[in-house]
Image 1 (cartoon, rainbow, N blue to C red):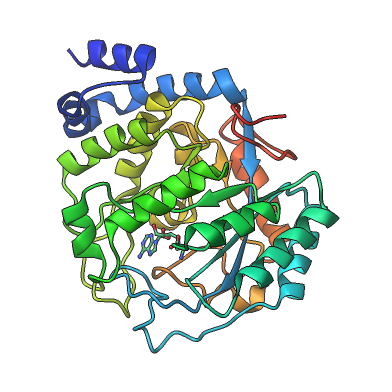
Image 2 (cartoon, rainbow, N blue to C red):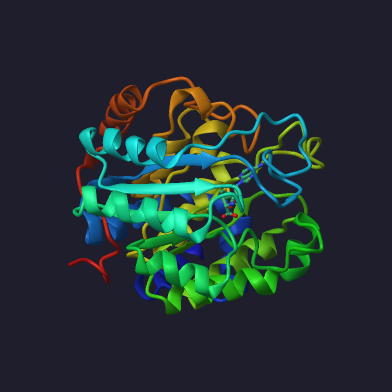
Length: 348
Ligand code: SAH
């Protein structure tokens, strides 16, 4: 009986919330069939190519207090750091030599970096490496700020919505953070021509299977270019320290559903997935993911960008990370490529 649902999802990329829920609740029975279809869908757009993005975590200062996040302002035990513009552009230079053609600048919401400073950094990277894409992941800003960053040459922006259920959103964030503003940001970014990535945590406290079914409808409606999902993992210095972690299995299952719902989407197997399960990233690729985001930050600050406990890859140099990942990816039958890796709708 699940065959018909899997078939229709693969053909049309759409199910009702009730139908997604049936698959989610019976995931043990349908996991492998869905993963196989997801791999086929991925191959149609990307062959066996896996794109890599060099992640530069340039500040762990944050003015927000998200209940799940280890770099929340209220975590007074966190050792804070900021990278200088030279350190940021230098990390991109190192990444270029290692074969990266996309750089992701991510940080807490840190007012220290003005629009002007950020625009300068983006311009420098784009000037030195015109064949590369710059992705920003700086949280919520106003339209004018996004506009200036886009004008400076930023190509893409990652801003996870975290949950598509506004009532659930309000239990993960303090009242000052509004779901409506998150949506406003995502719409602004789209209207400015960024390739936009959204996404949610899997197994965050209070999330139901019905919420997960609704996530798929939300993604379909929003039509993002990228979708980042990963299991929620507790951090010891947050209000959610005692909450259960989300599972790697459920995350991989959702990766397959997302691949079939938005077949051409850029879909990373995230560091959180690799933390929840030592083979999580390989399993994510086998479930339909096509992007990896290794860390390019200087090793001296890696351990300080701790969103959750136990984060992997905080000790190695970027060069070692990339060798390790190449080997892991090869075992899935896929291959890491040196390419900018735009969404097919945006490729030159
Ligand atoms: N300040 C930026 C970057 C946030 S960190 C922004 O607001 O977009 C990137 C992502 O890490 C978040 O969007 C969130 O989904 C994820 N994250 C944060 N804490 C986490 C935790 N404890 N477990 C799993 N993922 C987490």
